[in-house]
Image (tube, rainbow, N blue to C red; front, side, top):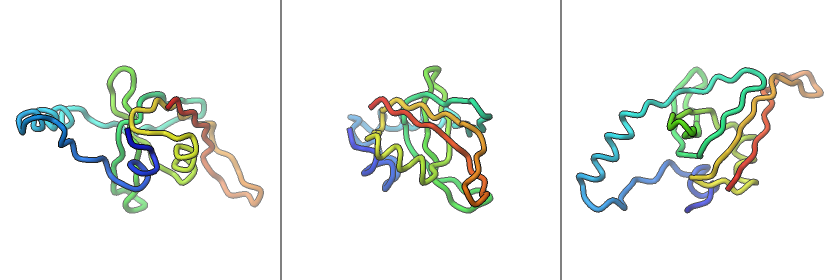
Length: 126
């Protein structure tokens, strides 16, 4: 399996060309299309736990942004924005596709100069 830095931070999800036939590839794509991806909107104390599944690019109020997609134990796909802090911590903890992660939202904090930011804790079980 490839490491987070080479596949998740710098590249999009790799195409699935390892399946034997075009029918297998089409069936796999149909399964992906049938599984909706929800956006995570955490409240302080919420934790998103699951397998690092993929990444995607979305267009929003701040332009194009990267999101990581997590598959939960129930099989749901949940997306959350890849901030620099999250990317750095995934890389430092050697996350890969398939790694189990826990991202906890600690709430809003302030820097020493009074700027507000979202505080998180991240654990990776590679």
